[in-house]
Length: 186
Length: 186
DNA sequence: GATTTATATATCAAAAAGATATATCATAAT
DNA sequence: ATTATGATATATCTTTTTGATATATAAATC
Image 1: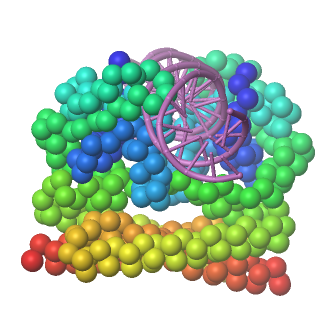
Image 2: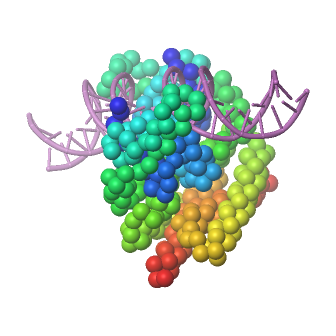
Image 3: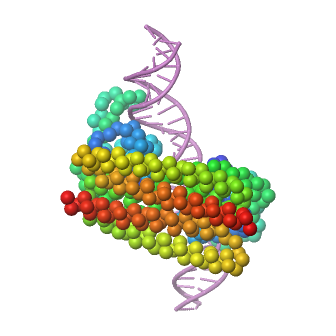
């Protein structure tokens, strides 16, 4: 069984901390709620769940007929798991490494026509505008829940981050278009 | 020899398009100028350079005594390489997948004390302020070059993106701190 | 009853990251 | 002069991560 020094372990522990989950629901939940700032694949989730159990950080309510198919295996966090999670929470987050293909293409701009770059920027603007809208809707929904007495401060904070970042990306792209057009006019 | 369907191929072609380079200088250049939005490791650069030569997209001025050590191998792009690069430039950039460990820790906020989160946010604010400063300095230097008649529009655009994004991240973190403190006061 | 969709576990190949081994050359310190 | 250090340079190996796919079942739709 591999060592798994990556972050998958803690992501899963963090999710299990709020409720028991199957590998499948972990994946779905990640896709819906975390995908803007984190992603995990089945190839990491299932092996990591086994490691978690082997290390005593989680237990599985193994509903008999496993193997393939629908032998639903529900995982729950243990006290040891909560302790491990809490220790990781204190560790300084690693510096993020981002990969923006659009910036790569912008920096290689000399190798194409400016119309191509403008086209990419237009797509990018549209996408980021949509994301800002999406994040704002998400904020509203969470604010309603807050009105009902349900605390979801931390989810609101991550959505708020989305609003900030996607707006900034959009603003940049609008400015970038202007600058490329000015360059072309010379 | 592996297929290498990833982006490394085009990143290297894009760099070779401006001047001939060794694997080492490609890595250094990436670290200095591209690291904010792209990164490649030696484990990708050296094999990819060989693939590029095998596919006729680059040629190497193989200075004899290779193997280990300092048998400097300089790679240059070919016409076929420029064509391949130009075709890739037209392709729609893939949607970026980001991994922000700080957002993960914020969303798992219930599993630690608010002081821990505030500490992470303070570090994050400091780092992003520095990055904004760095990006602005970079912009200034490039604007001077522009005054000297050297066009570096595309480098300025990527630096400008940094200014926008890092400012947005900093602003978010400041706001997030406030919200977490308010929550704590209840 | 048949077909499709969602649920669910599992694994494999490929891509990417990270670390490290090896060797050389330049330069700074002793 | 010699030695140590650091930058240059290629190369590779392991681990991580991704992406795709195989398998199977339950539920829903037609």
